[in-house]
Length: 253
Image (tube, rainbow, N blue to C red; front, side):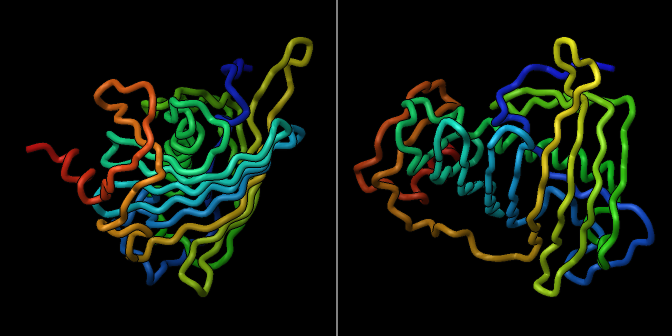
C-alpha cells in the first residue's frame, strides 16, 4: 500500500460525483458540458474523526474570475470570509479575522479540491453531467492509481486504494445533487492499513447566471495581493478601486 503524502487537514478535500448503472440525459446541460463547467458549486465537507467541517460555495464568472465563500469550523477555531480571484493573477479577501498578511494560503484547500474534483468526475462519468439524471448509486474503487495534484497554490496526493460510495441525482431545481463517502489509504506508524474518510454533500448548478459582484463593485475594505507579480503580502483597498479596474489591469495595455 502506498504512503499518503503528509498534508494539512485543510488540504484533504475533494468533491466527487462517480456514477454507475443505467444513465439518463439532462435537459439542462449540453453533451459538450464538462464537470468543471459548473457555474455554482456548493459543498459541505466533514473529515471523520478530526472535528473539521467546511462549507465552500464557488461562483465562476464567464470572464475567468472565481468567487469563493468560506465557512470552516475546526478544533482551532472558526474561519469565515470571501475570496475573489481575478483572472488567476490577483487575490482579494474579506473577513478571515486574525489571518496573516499573506492571503494566498487561504486558497490552497479550495483550489486543490476543485482540481481533484474534476479528475474524479471525469473518471466517474467521462460523458459529463449530461449523462446524469435519475438518482443513481455510486460504488467505485481505484486499487492502484494515486491522485497527484498541483494547483499552483498547493500540491498533494490521495493514495490508492480509494473508493467512493453514495448517490447522485438531478433535482427539480436544475441542480445536480450528491451525497457520498470518500475513503482513501492513509497509513500511520504501526497502522499500515489505516484509512482516511471524508463525507460530502451538496450540489452543482450549470445554468448561466449573473456573477454575484458586478464590475462596478467598489472593493474598499478588501485585502488585495497581486501574487502573479511576486507580492507576498496583501494591502488594504481604500481608494475606490473597482472590480472593472482590476480586470482591465490584468488584461494589460
